[in-house]
Amino acid sequence: MTATTATATAARERFRAGLRTTTSGWCTGRTQANLISVPRGWAYDLLLLTQRNPRPRPVLDVTDPGSTSTVLAPGADLRTDLPGYLGARRRGGGRGRRGRPGALAAGRCPAVT
Image (cartoon, rainbow, N blue to C red; front, side, top):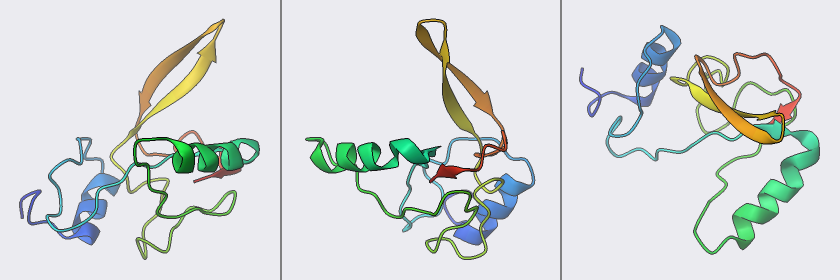
């Protein structure tokens, strides 16, 4: 199996097992999307931004706070089945970025995804 011939389920299994890589080019014929997880209080503002921004930012699904799954990927666990993420955080007056394994590995799960 290569990245381009992998099924979505097989790709998620490899990411769950620890593979850390970009997902570009994986699972030919499937839609690639980014996961955005925000505190519940920011969810509506983010939804408005995606709708009003002049560049397309389609929202494919919105989960309930604390949910670790989506109807778009049956059997997937949003905490473990993505190859990693960049988290933005405030540092003094600016913003910092840090990479982490697993999308919601930090355990802050009252977020809306």
